[in-house]
Length: 315
Ligand code: BYC
Image (spheres, rainbow, N blue to C red):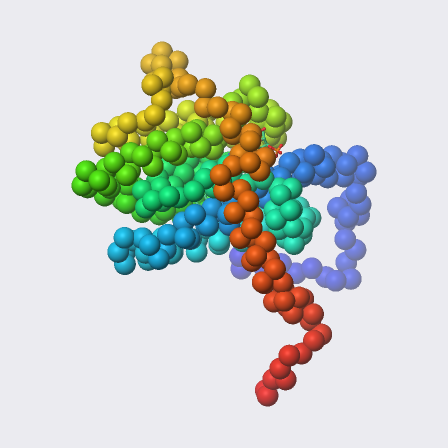
């Protein structure tokens, strides 16, 4: 039958299979720098998911109507699930989850710039749900075709869920765009606030990106920061403009010859300040994570003491 086989246990295994050629073995081992880079990137992505749940989480009780509350609650739950998948993928490379979380709360590890800005109104949440999720999908669909299986498999699954998030974000965004004058103004103001962080989301321009060249050579990143930003602009600027909304950059336009988008300098100084801890919400975000770590420590300690019994089971 299919795949059936019988191996006589007494039969000697083929020596050529079990003996390692030291040269081939050395070539097979994962280079330390490849591993280090993957841990850095996957860990930052995982942190971005749990920190990203914070600005949206605060809107669960304030979302307009039961339907929107249910949707945002499910989305936040998904984001935490994404972090679980990503921490597991990073753990395959040897860094324990506790070490990753310690590096997050000590400020050693980075997470996405965008989550260091406040979600002041419901319109900010719709901009996150539509445009930040869209930006994430552009990045993640590309990188899900990369070279490291555990990260790519996590990204593939995440993208399925992000596609739902994008739909709910777009739906909420359009509802405000076609709503009352006050709703449109609220949306336009949120769009103006978020445009710069969204431009920053894809990372610094290729000219000043530190890791892109190496990561693309190793097929960890499947497109450069500028290429992803360009792809995002091509797809989503028309969707924003067709709703008669404007973008706060007078120089934003597509060069029809090169097919590249041109825009004003997105203020990379602000980007670096924010990712290095000096954004409007960095300390607030990390304070929440520290609080969660402190309050949940007894649970982790209890779970890890496998020989301790808190209850004697009856059966
Ligand atoms: N934010 O050499 P570069 C989500 C750092 S969550 C912060 O170009 P690279 C969602 C970079 O780390 C999805 N830092 O870096 C969740 C490096 O610093 P270090 C988040 C940034 O790695 C909840 C330095 O700048 N997505 O969507 O080649 C609700 C130089 O940059 C950022 C991911 O995490 C940034 N935006 O390329 C809703 C995707 N950009 O480490 C939505 C995974 C750059 O040397 N990550 N830096 O100190 C990536 O694809 C890449 O790491 C990046 C940057 C494209 C972001």
